[in-house]
Length: 61
Image (tube, rainbow, N blue to C red; front, side):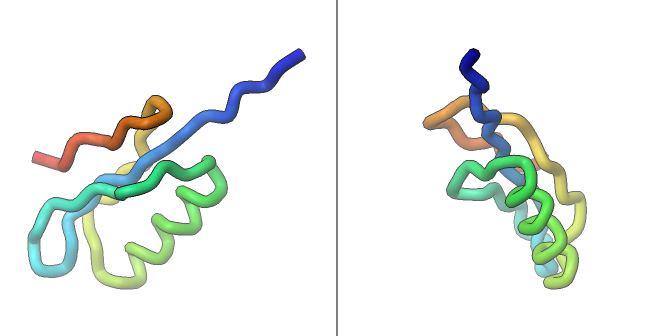
């Protein structure tokens, strides 16, 4: 039995109002840790989104 790794990216708006996306894919636990880091830095609208390998999430509107 093969278990496929699921990849996640993050989208957020930084403290100065600029929409941002992660430049790397994370596993679910790592994405959760990164979300907490972004919250601590004052980012808003943080979303963890599933991504396909080799793809990045679209920036928030």
